[in-house]
Image (cartoon, rainbow, N blue to C red; front, top):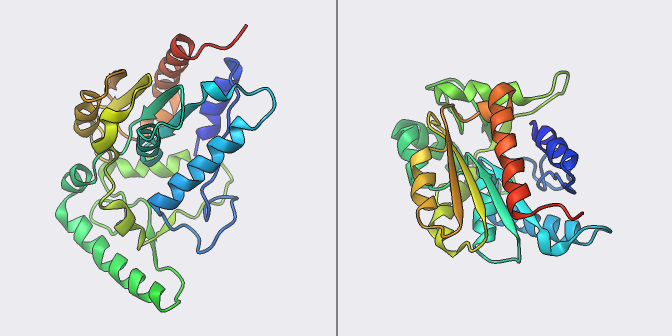
Amino acid sequence: MRLDAYAERFADAGYHVLVFDYRGFGESDGTPRRVVNVDMQHADWRAAIAFARSQTGVDATKTVLWGSSLSGGHVLALASEGLGVAAVIAQVPHIDSSVSAREGGTTRWSSLALHAAWDQAAGLLGAPPHYVPASGKPGCVAFMNAPEAAGYLRLVPDGFEFDQSIAARSLFSLMNYSPGRTASRISVPTLVQVASDDETTPASAAISAVERMPMSELKTYQTDHFSPYLGDTFEAFVADQVAFLERHVPVAD
């Protein structure tokens, strides 16, 4: 989903980069598949950080966390725990579940909740997950169905078979997830990039969180949630990210 494009830019600038799939997603092992569990994803992040720091030639004291959308919230949540990271980059991050729910409309969340309750109950009886789309058209049952959600599938590489379904029970892990609540604990340089027209992770929540972060830098772009991965908007976002890294975590000579 275009994460390789960012990784290549950071590598070109002289940084070591690790990109990984969460358990149950992509090429990682784990069953059931495509269940979003925040606690498990945080554990996967900690494992990835430990692995990166163990690699030859890596300076473990200069670890930087990078995340976008949901993982943008993850990196903020993890940075608030300390973990000895040197800096954080959070792109169009998920900050506050209540704000996202309000922007998405109660009808969407109510419909999703019915599917999630069914899936959760069936799962307790050993049934495989009941899946719903990650993105869809306005009015349909999907985790993202704002008009901009059509941009999600534009990120899939040409010729790649991509199953965008997500276990409906994932809603229960996400609905109370608000990493902005602990943002004031982040004590390292943090770049937060928001999209003024974002209907998926509203900019207002991120702006409020930044105000509580003592070493934060906020950049706002007139775009939507999915455009930062492509074209000129990608170029603007990644250029600011590389510049931030060069200021705060420069590559050793």
